[in-house]
Amino acid sequence: MESPTTTHLKVANRILCYLKATLDYGLFYSSSKEFKLEGYCDNDWVGDTNDQKSTSGYVFFIGNIAFTWSFKKQPIVTLSTCEAEYVAATSCVCHAVWLRNLLKTVGILQDDPTVIHVDNKSTIALAKNPVFHDRSKHIDTRFHFIRDCISRKEVQVEYVKTEDQIADIFTKPLKVNVINNLRTLLGVFQKKKKNTFKGGC
Image (tube, rainbow, N blue to C red; front, top):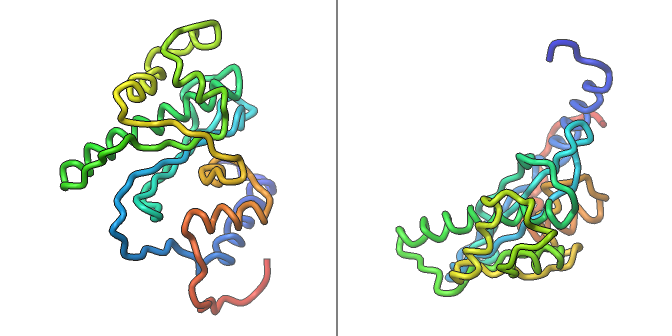
């Protein structure tokens, strides 16, 4: 950074404190015979107040094991939480299709549609409605890919309560108790503590 300020120093210190406090945490991978693909996706509407863009996040599980995730800023400015969720869901569905094809090449077939969990009922209704109307006609055509995948029964979009929306942990600042709950749902657990670093944050 060309001209760092005390604000940047505080942010860097907070990151270091977080890393120090979570050195003993990690994803727990156990043996499983379940290979059903399942995804969760979410967004923070207008999370960046500078350019008014939202951040999409998703995570995929095989069985109960999280194995791939992503979060990044959306390429467009959305006009509502519903639209932001729709864009996030489409991004998630694109990755789901790619994962289904990848699993197919290694002999793991997905007989049923891949379930994508979304916590916005309006978004689900929009994704399942093949008819364009005032709420969707202005949305770029590429984001309607989700409708095609639903009609081909490659994916199925289902509602999940906000408190169980695991992808929330990737998209927005949350309270400690919420983070702890979502972290557990994600499959992240604390190993035997071996942290020898001294000093506080």
